[in-house]
Image 1 (tube, helix red, strand yellow):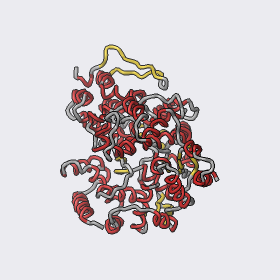
Image 2: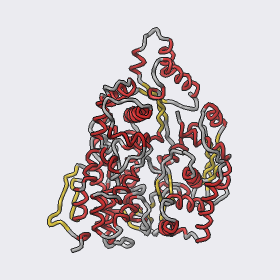
Image 3: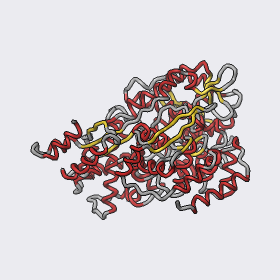
Image 4: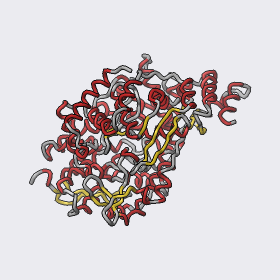
Length: 167
Length: 431
């Protein structure tokens, strides 16, 4: 029962707090691309890989009281904070769900901006292509963001680091 | 004349119950419709198992694909000579609209979940692989199949083109809402599409709606909301989906444990063991799947035969509302009791959640999650729809999710009335 929900709760248990829905979307996608077996399906959207399933599942977890969502009004948008609740922790005690350790990777991603994570997840989306074509794709589909070569190189190193880090 | 510019001598029209007529003048479109990979969509139902709830819902992805094409054709007709619109993209838009659902398989939602497949990947393979569709698209110009694939994959550089096929107010949704309403017979899915098409304006990277058309869009959002809860989310349809998924799981499990099927499930073998090739994938349509379900009704395995009999003869599971937080202990007790009663809980006690559905309703898309619907104000400023419309604001902020517990009540009733297990199960389920 609720195996996919439990995996997400395990993720929140390893992350203390996640700030921003966009960041949450991209972190789960990047972890998924690093062999963490999340089942949420992603499609490419205006702001990079996005999962409607993930959005819905987070909503369900909030409504069930397993995750706490705090809404803050910013200048042109709302920002959301997510944390596992005591009820969520209790549910996890009953539930055997094995995921690779990910605390360190999550912590590294949390330090990055959502703009950078959008770049990383977009590059991972096209990773089946040769490196030059991935960079070309980024310039095409993310032309407005004007990512610099330095950022793209940093993103390549970050991807390598994510895949090397086992925790 | 170049193939891409070739017109049919006489316009072809398809009678359509939703749009009255679908008009085709381009040779390329006509050839695509005739391709076997497109004709196959006749054998894949648009609404999967909904026909077991709404008996009219037997329409196919073929109908829908033609409908999306027709809507895009009408939008582009309105866009002619408008600023921001490049008429060189016309044929690309029409092809992408027509072919956007090409990779859908039989009962694709359940199949994709169980066998970990993605119909979008198969759409790409059909467009770019060794297929009749690819041969036709390649005749248009070098790199044209890749362009169509990029539009459908939402990775094409021109976001305006992408947003016609895939956005929060796109041709895909406008067709399926009206078509699904028509074929299910419900009265919710109607809105003034003509009006919406008239107030759509092309902007640099998205389609926006002239502010004066806000009320027509409100109607569209309401219809999307109503269809979500009344049709797509119908608990009986979900019961059928649950049984279908369990059939596929059981068949796969049996195959993995070396079970000898009375009829070798040839069409399913690659689904059970690995990722099917494109040829294998295309060979398994709903007619073939239903054939196996009927054959499996006579299988020796009691679970597989029972589940298939339920699906084919519409003997669905019953359900109750379920809160996994408040009822965790009940769940664990039920799991034990079902085992005791000889009902394998992995197949006969199923929690289904709203997030298991492939449909969604409008969200403003805070913080750059997903592009919202924008209104074009008289001063040329863009405003997000829910910030201007009280109606949209009131429904898009609502968080409605639910979880249901499905089980075979008929099997429980068959148990002896003296059974304590039966008594306790029914007590937990019905209080």
